[in-house]
Length: 601
Image 1 (spheres, rainbow, N blue to C red):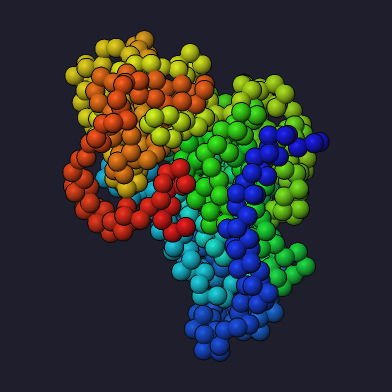
Image 2: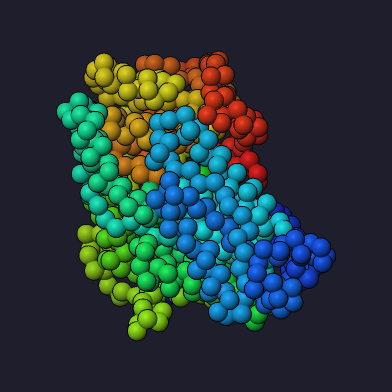
């Protein structure tokens, strides 16, 4: 199948744009690769320190003839998605010994939950935790005793941070081992209805708590298609998981078998074997294009529009918002998973899941088929699905047809002909909007602005019944320099209620929306941000504004707008408390949201 002309054009543009930085990155990686297995260069004293507690593995480690895996884990038992990782290191070590290798926990990285910190002060640290994770993983791997790394992480900032680290240590292989989604609980649409009823006072906190606990109820990722599950999709489309590994539930025999197989594969693709596959060769321009196509085809999280450029930059690759928009314009939306539909990721997986989708997109010429993956050369490997046959792990052909066309459709008969994202430009700067769950009649809105400096003020105005006409709600000073770019997911029930009352409403912000962004149009990541004196700091209450997600424009329709002096606000209250003072250096040095809001790259 011939590659789609737009996919080819965008890929070539990325390659050309990235030529200097990618060339420098690959040159650095090749020098490290040429140096050979890292442990050969450690002194006896260095190695004695590294192996002192390794018991029966000492002999294999000191001889340096068998590969040694470095395990980087995001385990903690507060996060349901990461709780299963508690038992992974022992399982990986056992698997390594069985094939003549060794494994050590190189280090742990923090893993915070946006679901816990949503609407709380801690959310102001969330985006920057991605950089902390990359740094922490780098510290662990810097001991230079590992022939490959396996990364244990799932959720929002964790996987992007680990990918940044994997790219930085791109001279060794990197295999990502997921934990899988929790089994289905209270349907996500029912939970959303209870949230909206709570917002209007129709039910009390007891009913809200009951609904939330019935939805988030066990080990594994949340079952809606937010950032965590979008991360898992990306790891398959980009070739960093084993095929079909993403959405197998925790605590199952198949999940354990895939973990063992992942460890075995990581050992097999080191420089000590015959299938050397360093991460630098997996994380190339085509892999990132495949990831963006997957993002569009699944209607994935807007947070990845921040994370993918930061991840790519760590591998010397420069992505632009227009790359996302151009690929979205030719990628069919093939999945309807909450908040874009009623199904959850378990239903999506049962309907054919990522294997079916990858096969369809390959057939349509929308994915690069020749990428290097941890499973081998060629993305067609990811059309297979893992199964246990008489206790042995096998990969068999995946579903040739969707098992439920209300959830998953073929590329030739999608839910809509274009993907889920649109870039925005205008006199407010640049931004992005997710439209896959927004009704077509709500994608263009012209209305007067109401300007706020935090989401609590929006909620207070809602409770005071101040929204009585079509309104564009502007929430500014929420960007990475101002407040660390917290998610504004707490506004979703309020704005959804207004929309259900018949008003046309939209959100415009220099902050983030949740990975579960839904039916309310939200122009997010507006850049330059207000704290940088960006145009959004010039908007006034009553300004006529127009958000056009069809044509990709975001404008203030007032004469003299460009001549106004940007407002400033006192942000000192957000500089300390709950760890925020520790992150002042991040706020002072963070890059633009359009470039991934990165600090370490």
